[in-house]
Image (cartoon, rainbow, N blue to C red; front, side, top):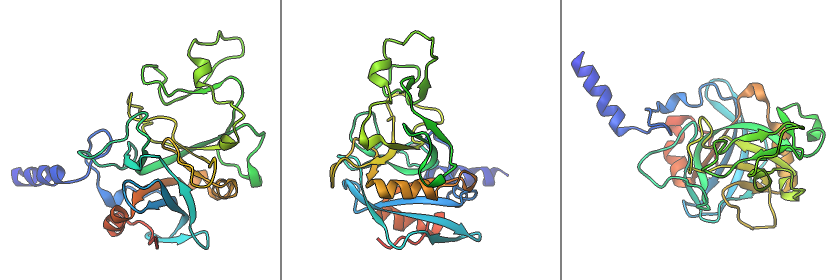
Length: 253
């Protein structure tokens, strides 16, 4: 028994950990995931990548849903490990305002937008943004990295205007939540990470994943809540190193 405990501790010390420091068993991370959005970049410093959507067929097989990957733009400072379903400790970590996109594996959350309905008849969980909605990116605020909706008759908090979501910005026509640093949020480790529309060809983001409107709406049509969709963002070298052990799709980068 003592030997078994010691062996477990040795494996744990050498293995990857989640954002809270708990040991990750790589082969089980995607066990209940049936949809993946995958972005692969050249390296850690890259602000551009390629995106592909996959659906699981059988226990291990992943099938691409598009004919070819589409281009995306990422954080102006490249990638840093985020806090999600999978990350690695002891390396560069995503922090608030660092200009990095969070690398790792993340659950995909709700879609937000100002339109009445989602495109293409999608029934994925959707919240229509109004003048009452905010997303907090201030680490000192108790609602940090959370969606907040105030009541119609509620007095507007002093911080609300600087955090409001309804901006009439074409880049935020649709916001698909990437659940980085969400369960629970840790102050200062990054907030408001979404898929959204790019502002111009090659124009970098503050940490989000941006693309053409047509491609973003294709993702919205692809997503199914009951398929437990997740997002993988990694440099090509990391993706290849982990692909077989973690049962990633065969992404031809």
